[in-house]
Image 1 (tube, one colour):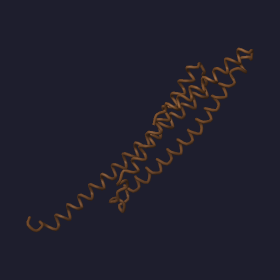
Image 2 (cartoon, helix red, strand yellow):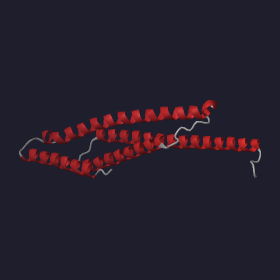
Image 3 (cartoon, helix red, strand yellow):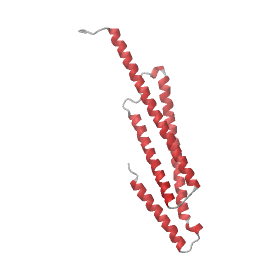
Image 4 (cartoon, one colour):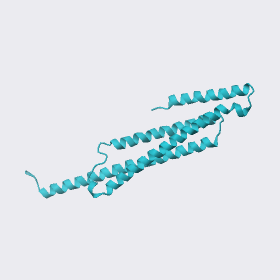
Length: 178
């Protein structure tokens, strides 16, 4: 999915806010009042980032819980012969989530660039963006570990099942005609 429509909308919004600020200065408002629209937009974006950060922590928490389950099942003798992701549905879902997170990261970086191009600098905005980027990086790292563990578990199960089948065939001896 492309972020082009989002980028265009954001560029228009930022341009409108910048125009409003310039018009306010042109009619004689003090700079402290004229920059309020841009500050409000930055404040709103920081609030939105905070919600996204919380969401990233929830996603990371889910990945951690799933990873714990996969590791527990891999070490449990009763489930050592159970495939966890036979149709690769979970792996695909985790991959899709990772792609969405990376798109969100790209969008965040584009917004940072747009604010910078307008000459607007905010320490709070910078901190929030760094927090979001770190939360996304953590979630993506966990996603990669989860995918690797799922794959390793299922590969080990297949190897065990093949070994058991080979033992069964060896115990039965050569078949008729062989």
